[in-house]
Length: 406
Image (tube, rainbow, N blue to C red; front, top):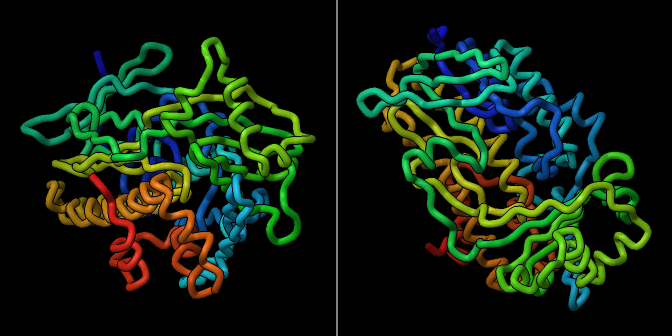
């Protein structure tokens, strides 16, 4: 016997996209259940929070308490490992005055967002597993879940929000995932102690070191811990020697870049290296009859522009607005969600086109050559997360210069 209850919305996944969507829905008075399979806090990559996400955190009364705990991030520095060219993009140079972003330990940030959703009235079930998404007449109608004690629950919902991350449960079920051309990169990452970081106003800057085979990031977390990860081309991944462990290959990849060697010369690695590959994709259908995809479930580009976290937080806010509008109109059709899907698609495709150009080798030169403030403004704005809504002239120019290749 399964206990079945009716709610307005079931959110599958309690990461940033799911938590933000659920928190905003609950804040507006909707009945919401969040189903998360992992127990928080959890170790997770993706620590950069773009300034463009902070208005959403303001709406949840989270910016101030989080700012007290996290490393403030005033910009992004890009360095070429081979030539030594370097360029800093300060968020102060962006077209919109968005202020600084954060470098945030995801274990704490994800937990804080999920707790906030619960404080605002969302029912959070964790750990809990989705057994099935139930459809009737082509429309999503509910979910069936199981708890660790073997209890099984059913929820009939007016809307199902898929925030299951790169698992992308609904898109996989509907066979609606497509790889993004040219972004077949392998990732390796680990956390370090005492990696060298910049000082003063630049201490919290994300550092992106461009290498012949990809790029390496350094995200300085609060205190003395940093996240260092490498995005590698298929050719470099094939350079892994027979029998070479992930730890050794990761170490060799970092050692191949002189600026990174300097960062870790006196540092200690705290965790084994983690590897991930084949994760860049998009879901052409981001919404349907009674369902919406949000965050990584709707597609993942690359960590290059912090797109994943910003599409999770900003996209969660977009999704919440769309769902509230649909609930108020009692119209849960795919057409009702079309504007949401289009807005998220445009933001995702902008990130994807720029990232393709980066790996093709055309984007780094454009960024390194941006010596005046006017030339830096478009790049600072993208890095700050100014990607949603209709394109202003500067964004339209970037789309035309660096279009998404299918």
